[in-house]
Image (cartoon, rainbow, N blue to C red):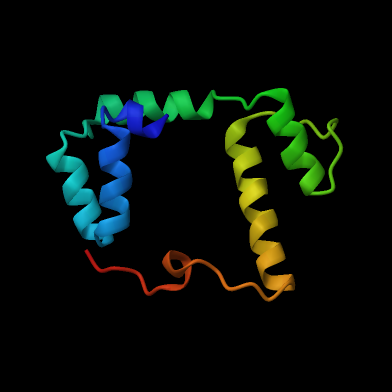
Amino acid sequence: MVIDGLGLQRERVIEAARNRSYTGFVFELRAQGANFDPANVAALKRAIAGYNHDDETRKGILAAAGLTDNVGINDAVRLNILDDLEGFYFSLTLNVPLPQEVTAEPVSA
């Protein structure tokens, strides 16, 4: 959704993310013609905020977090946050190392 919303080519974005630092990645997105103008970014944010997962995905995320389907969480933004927190919790409780990009020092701008 984000890649399409910024007008980028999926394969090139994935390659850029794998092969460049964060600063280089942003540069690559701009080089590909990413549309970061305020109106386009606002439209993309509205699309993301209004997106809902399908029922199967929603139920799976809720079940993994030990919640029933009647908790009233339907939007993808909150479900994705819940899914991320559940994964983070399990990585801590099972002593599984976090991915490098999470544990690395922030890149200065």
